[in-house]
Image (cartoon, rainbow, N blue to C red; front, side, top):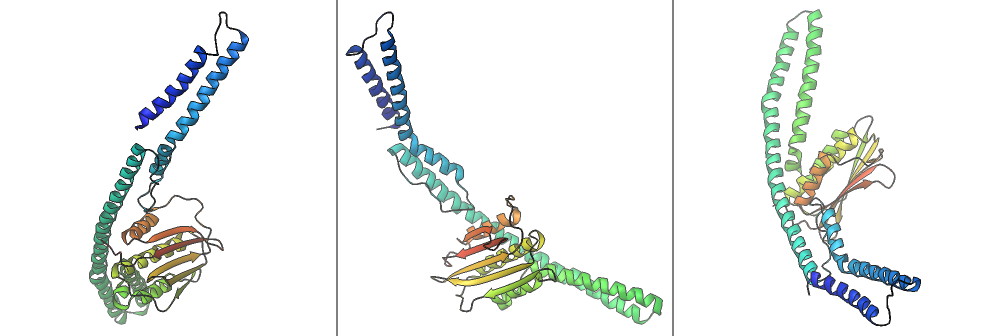
Length: 317
């Protein structure tokens, strides 16, 4: 029976009972007596209460589906409303769940293409920085050294200062190129890449330590890249925004050849700030490989980012 007919018949039954009472034991005189008025008002109140309860019960599954629709987030996949209620509401819930499945699959596919193109562009820019700007700065360094060796002392000091500035710029270019294209990840693997990354972020103000459990399973290169990028973005946020003085990076195995990455700092926490592009990017990368990303408060204060890869067989599409 359709929802329309159920509500109609419930209301018809209530009104039929009211009419039967008026035609039977309950009468209305002219003028209306006080007792009869009380009976009519009581009957009306009873009908309204019963009608409200029946409508609440009948439309409760639709209300639950509406809340599930409002809370749906493609960056937090997997949540589905339970299929309950009458046939129409159950069919509507099935259709909504199928739509979520399709949207999540399309989102993962499109995100995979975008991130693949992004990584290719990162590699291209890093290569140009290394081959063009890096070589140009190296040539400038050699020219400055040659000029400093052939000039007088007053000018030689200025040339040495220019050399140091150029050398610092060359180091910055190389550091930017390494962040754009983690060559150590491709050449030496995830363990060395994470240790190199933590050493790069460590300063006199910020202590960064990597804790990597031995015996981690072999991972697909796409998964290793996601782990590296999530750790890189987490360390960037901790260094720039958290005010932290200590960051710990944990990489440890999980059951069924899974892997878990945990980045924990002692900063001032998220403070209910809206998620920026960096966190959104981490969520998209997690969705790409079917991983679970949790960002919240650290037990000892600060912020922690946890990436759980429970099914490493789900690589980038």
